[in-house]
Length: 251
Image (tube, rainbow, N blue to C red):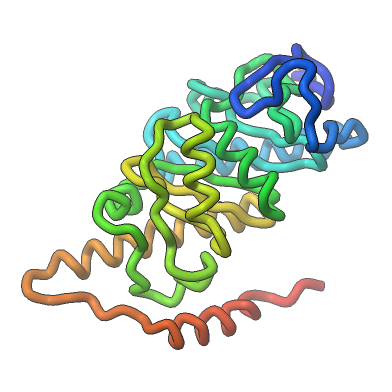
């Protein structure tokens, strides 16, 4: 039997973490009711593929971490407590920018406030949150990821570590936003990583690069009697400038 996808606005509307209280006015736009079902379905499929990739690549274990993508004024996001390999097209979950659920019956991830904070404050189209081992380990040791490689420039500069706050809280969302100032990624102390981008591919690539860079620093700093060399501010600035033109030109 063919599975049916729900349109934005279908399903039970509920209050979820990060949502405006019932009856409260919101400065956020209403859900994009014109978003075509095909766009939502394609975005959900890509979101699920990305979430499964975080597991395959060892960036999360079990149902930890979460992924979201914005379609118009609707944010599609992984549900809480559901293994990614079990997600189907019919399991699509969507909320508006005020946090009200407008698609699906499964509850969204508990980290919804963090995702919404990124969309409200940046031009992000996708957000990836992981519990990557090396990046999380680095979050226990420093307040900023040492600039051991020029890929630091892909994230806007030296990556900050947000102070610890309980998962799923507005406190964590605010700490993350502060760490993300002029950056596209940050670490969460004793927790994991957050990156965003103009697409799921870009957001995921930034997560993978951040984890690789943390692993590189941990490897180099573990050599007894040696201290890793770090890039200077001028070297990072030059690398950032060159990275702006990296990749194939868009048609």
